[in-house]
Amino acid sequence: MSEKIIPTREKILANIRIQRFTPDKDRTPYFDNFKVEVETGMTVLEALRLIKNQQDSSLTFRAFCRSAICGSCTVRVNADPVLACSTQLLPIIKDFGKASVTITPMSNLPILRDLVVDIDPVIEKLAKMHPYLMKNKERIPKTLEQESLMSQKELTQFGQLTDCILCGACFSTCSAVKVDKTYAGPLSFAKAYRFSIDPRDSFRGMRIQASMDQGLWSCVQCRKCIKVCPKDIRPADSIRDMRRIAIDDGIHDTPGSRRAKAYTDDVEKFGQVNKPMLPVIVNGTKGWAAIEAAEVGLKKHGLEVTRQVCKLPGQSGSAKVYSKIREIEKKGK
Amino acid sequence: MIDLNDGNMHYAFYSGCCFQGADARFFEILGDVFDKVDVKLHIIAEAVCCGAGVIEERSELTSLSINARNMAAAEKMGLPFYTPCSTCFNVISNVQKRLREDTQLFDQVNEILAVDNIEYKGECKITHTLWMLAQDVGLQKLAERVTHPLNGLRVASYYGCHTRNPSDIQNYESSDNPTSLEDILKVLGVDIVDYDTRDECCGYHLTWPNNELSMKMTGSVLQGAQKQDVDLMVTSCPLCFKNLDGVQPKALAATGQDFRLPVLFLPELVGLACGMSPKEMKLDWHTVPVQVRL
Picture 1: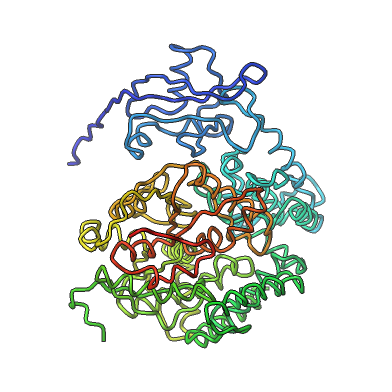
Picture 2: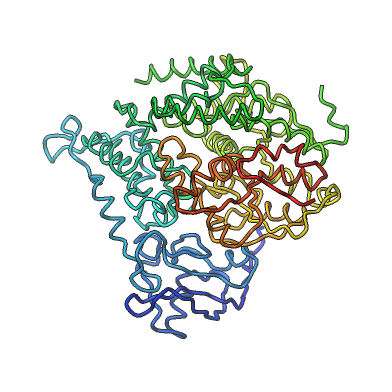
């Protein structure tokens, strides 16, 4: 006999601190505090609705489906972007160890009012990636009667990526968007990659170009987008994958591609990256200035200057692994 | 043979490749600092560079295999895997997670490793300075070893990204609200100062592909700390240290700022608080001069 589980219901009187801002009226954003009895299971959205219904009807936020599928209710709670409808408040209150949470609008986007931001910049960048299938005539049957079949293996390559709901959480947290407004942002690359590896598609080259135009190698791999994605699509991994297919398709002449090649080849050759020479490997002859500056620093501390790293003891074993993988990858092609 | 019952804690030490050039001194001081808290490091001789996630841009299977091999080498030593580098921690923990979740991939990687007569079992415990000090050594023991508490020092604590993101990269503590670094720093006696840019990325991994953005990120992090009038910043990541200290003048020039903020790598501050001299810590190697009153 299994024991009957009685869920514990807790209640905490919490302070919900919400950023307010009406352009043309307020000079800068400010905060309002609301007291809310937060119960087990209460979502951020439920708290926002409660405040709007009972305490301040002018509080403005965006929400629709309440099922984590429309992607419209993204806000930041204690600085982390979340879907308001699928995020419970109590665990956050416990995690941060105080009965107060701060709710702010998504960052990296213009505020329209209170918690509502203008997401057009995200959509405009996405549109440039050709986020739709362009018919691959070799793969798609000529008549409508025939289905365009796909193997399970093909589908697993990008299946998870189709779950993206364009909620913008990744865009809000992105380190590169913060410092470069022209950068596409994580979700656009994830979509570009998703369509580029779909066997029914024929537009991969265009998307690689569009990705490069929008900063493919400007992602810093801070991995924050993976952390905040409510659909677990791992955009930063897609960016690595997009870089890989770009290099596979012949994009060798960018600092990013040269770095990828240098790291991969150096670890095989030396067991480590030839960092002393990396500036020149990545940036060509203009990298010498960086190398010379580093060498001046080394000499100052009486260190030996070297332009070639030594082989690590682990190199020989790892090189065997490399050649085995080369064999496997050749067979795969 | 390593005597595991000598009263010390033993770790398989994966140094990563960030300790090249002028940063080689970290490699030297780590052992001395950890001696103070009865931790002994044993270099994983068979290890190679983790590839910093960059190798995945050429071949994911290569990254998975060489890092499974790195872990397998530590497993053979029968010791927990310790790396001071946050990126190595991130990449290798991610590989472990991937292989634990996907048995087919796990088997494929082990078939590959068979050419080098080594087997990855998936058992190895991976840790970082943060949790080695805060949890394995423990705050109480650390407190006992602090001989020169750094009272009154105003410090901005900086984790960097790779011990925090994504959330499932570690299960030592909350990734939204980590406290291990602050817990350690409090034991050393310093005052922790809140600042806006604590959760921002330092931009180190854009050094080569897009230096302009890298410098903007570094400048922004430093500016946030400077605004709070701190004495220094302390980071648990040696790569963040490279940007925050090593290229600080360039980053500040790129973001139109003119100040200097000393930055320390966490083990350096631990060493100082445990009685090691600035000279032993080779603090004069910093780009931004550090003056600590002891």
